[in-house]
Image (cartoon, rainbow, N blue to C red; front, top):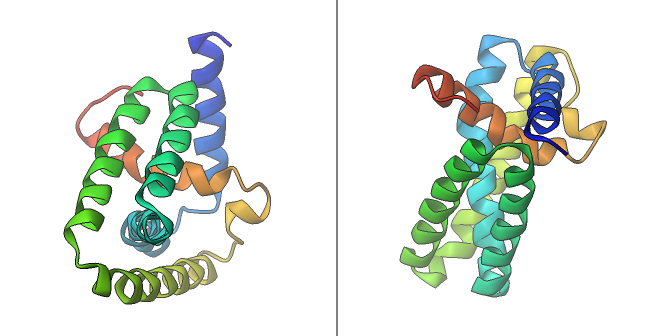
Length: 148
């Protein structure tokens, strides 16, 4: 696919995701909860084995690379920071903190969708589980005038 087709696909995915994330309270909840969920998934995978978490992050980054190189770079930085935090936390705290944060963040997400009055996008297509972080990152990119 050419870069134009990739960009078009990315814009379609972000636009579709945005349709169920327009209420300001739902957006704020997602800005907090989506990064927390990404971190908790990486942390829980880290507990299986660090290479599992790193491998999962790399697979996601390959997908992001196919959609947008600037987004892939931003997500690589985010994943690196999250994996660094995971490495720095004592292993004895990692499971209870990550699991608790995972549950609380998902409860937050569903509260946001209750406020929004629309079901989460990933109920339609699991691909949107990977688009959520890009949706959050897109706000930062627009604020910093970074093209994606």
